[in-house]
Image 1 (cartoon, rainbow, N blue to C red):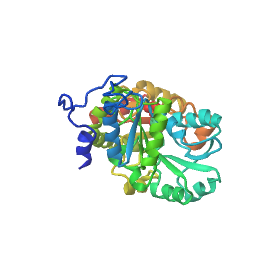
Image 2 (tube, rainbow, N blue to C red; image 1 turned 135 degrees about the vertical axis):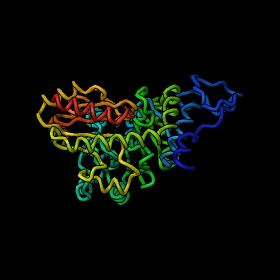
Image 3 (cartoon, rainbow, N blue to C red; image 1 turned 90 degrees about the horizontal axis):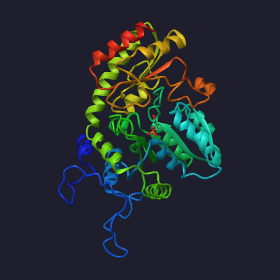
Image 4 (cartoon, protein in one colour; image 1 turned 180 degrees about the horizontal axis):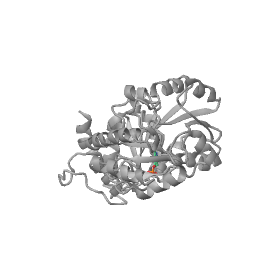
Length: 380
Ligand SMILES: Cc1ncc(COP(=O)(O)O)c(C=O)c1O
């Protein structure tokens, strides 16, 4: 089955009770038993729910994994994964990563006795030399947020396998339409389904896909034990969003390329980060590893904080808002918004400067987007 066909059909059969083409929202907490000790496949919606199951099977299929799990948020998915570890375990994590993930690791998981090393994932020696006897996991973002660095999956997986480490890839930015990390040997894929998978800025959700049945069993156990699962309505919305993922991703990328090329030529712009540009350090890996470059563009503006503030205030089609991956174009300032929870010196050392602006390029007419950037840059 082609990806586009799978996005629409995987996980969803016509409803067995009524023939409804679209999987219904099974908005129920509990299911009546057929007999003593005998269910019809479901007993309680925290454990499993038919609408959630349709989404979980769909995402698992798209990512090429054994099983999928839907969570209340991307952070709930990440928190659940971290419970695979125990006190004293060490994690090597990419340093340029979503601020909320950094906050979970540094502000929460450390309190439970986990240890973390944050580093750039572009050099084999740097990763190898960070490995300790207690290292158990390598955590990467396949396209990092917000610098859009590209993790070399073949290299990371090769190192991890040689040292017996579990690999987790946050695949939120490329989505399985552009990249399927399990095909490269990654053990667990995590998503904020809030972003491209849902795609309409009307849900917060998360997902995990496992490469093995053993990991699936453990994630299902933790999901049920910790109660981190998604609601049926949210699952239904994400499932609906995924049906149009391929066409949305194509247009996101077309618009993002136009925006990145426009910004690269602008005199008010110091540097543009977009994996599709030859100037991007991850361009060659992206060409080899992905089927496209995605819809996110970051850039640094000349003129310091005043120019940044003025740009953010004057952008109109790009709304000043957190999040990404929806049909609406959004602009945000990582230093004060999505990455504000990173300590300033760490954030700066990673390259997430005060001058950095992140764009989630939406599906509006591309001329409206470049004209909006033009007028906002003129005033900055
Ligand atoms: C790459 C990435 N991973 C995880 C998350 C967390 O997801 P959520 O906001 O759905 O909890 C985000 C949120 O912005 C993100 O950008």
